Length: 474
Ligand code: NAD
Picture 1: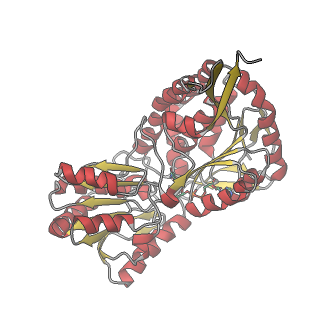
Picture 2: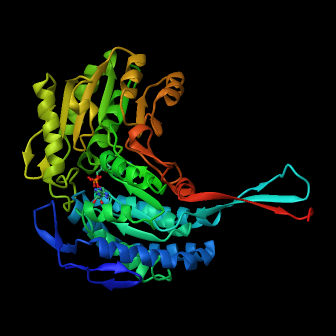
């Protein structure tokens, strides 16, 4: 049984209840983690609270130096971490390396943008007064993360929290907690004060204890919309700040004047990267009449070329899905859609947790596969009469993470960038897209409370204080 990391020490959990970590590759139990209870969580939060002052007294340069030390650890252990991500999550090894590379390269942004998180000198409306603003931390921060990016998703929030002096209690997903031990080891070997980073493992009830702790002032949650909304309710009772990044049902619109081959290529990547288990995965394709048939054919052809298999093998494009629960939803969505008149053009077969990428045509908006997050390697194609109807269909969703449009018309591209209700819009590029200096986050029920990514993330984890000095009238 693994341990918890609290107040700079590796400690046994209060109870000996454990959770097995099962590799989706072959069903092997690869480790067991403690299920931290209220008492463990309470200790971790006390440690974070007690570290708050020391962390704030460090200069931003000193905190940036800690993040550099942590990144050095990730660089030194990159091969080990990438392989572990694949073993516990199931994504192909080359995708795990994309994840480690992203964290290593973006750490500089968090560390060094943190130093540059200046306030403003504000012209006072009165004589003899000097006014300015400064950005300050909220206080102890719960970082709660999902299983699909065990390093990258918590990494951004943890880097941002430490850069801006919010001490952290980190609760990773129960499906993929082992990568989190590398994060804890990296901080353990750094010069961060004890208690400023803590790791508690467990399932949803451990996360719920953390959210309920009244000393937690900031919650950086990434996960499903249902859980995020539950957390927001609990946090609202004591007005704790929430940064929520949640689910999506993201569309790619393809217009008659699009480059069909390029659009199809981008759709297939968008729907099937990490076996479709990405918050901004391509979950709906909306094709206008004139392009529909050619696009469907090209998407099917490219989908059939994907190699499904062992994610540790070179050449694999799609590994297993993470668990039966997650696979079940994708299977149910496809079966229900076919039952309601959709046409399965390819794929949709299961072999254990492996699922052959599916392409569905004749999908209508009333089908679950067109409304609710599927989170699997499934491409539903919806037909639209024209451009305006394509935009209307795209926007008729409670989600709004990222959208994309394929067109040759500059005017349409600009118009769509304005009209699509999403936190990010990409033109002639997959919607399953992110890069270091762009903000990442959702509209509607996909997110709230700020944005992930470089300076946006840092700003979301700080509050603004106004300071005024009267240097004359006393
Ligand atoms: P999930 O909501 O089931 O779990 C996420 C985390 O919350 C886990 O650590 C879990 O243990 C914890 N948790 C569960 N119940 C809790 C509770 N009541 N209180 C506190 N914590 C609780 O999500 P998941 O299945 O791990 O991940 C998949 C979801 O994450 C998808 O919906 C996906 O779209 C979303 N996601 C969003 C983003 C984004 O940036 N928007 C990124 C990755 C994943």
